[in-house]
Amino acid sequence: VQLQAFGGGLLQAGGSLRLSCTASEFTLDGYIIGWFRQAPGKEREGVSCINNKDGRTFYVDDVKGRFTISRDNAGNTVYLQMNILEPEDTAVYYCATQLRGPAVLLPEFYDHWGQGTLVTVSS
Image 1 (tube, rainbow, N blue to C red):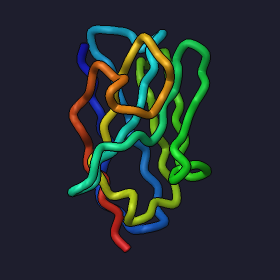
Image 2 (tube, rainbow, N blue to C red):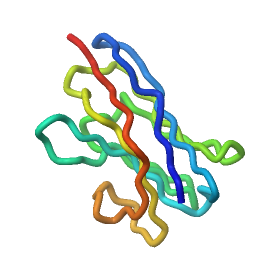
Image 3 (cartoon, rainbow, N blue to C red):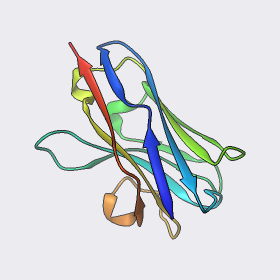
Image 4 (tube, rainbow, N blue to C red):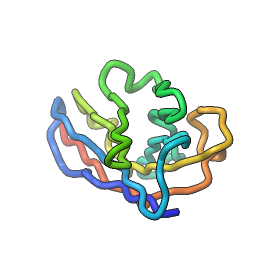
C-alpha cells in the first residue's frame, strides 16, 4: 500500500491550492481517505475525510466552507481543494487511508500514510 500526497507550495493568504493523494498498487475504492496536517510544534490534526463507499465527506470546523475533498475513482486520486488559505493553514499535509471505519478525523484510526506535502501560507 503506497500513498503519495503532492501539490503543496508557498502562497499568500487568500490564495488557493489543490492537494492530490494518489494510490499505487491498490485501489482507493472502499477506503476512507483522510487529509491531516501538522504544523510546527503542534499535534497532527484531521482536516477532512471522504468515505469512498458512499461518498460522504467530513470536515473539521476550521476549514468548513473553505476546503473541499473530492474523489476521482477513475484516476485513483483524492483531492483537497483549499481556498481562502490563511497563515494558520501552514502545515505539512498528509493523506491516509483506513478500511474498517468509522469515518472520523482521528489519526489513530488510519492505517496507511503517505509522505507529507508542505503548504506555507504567508500573510
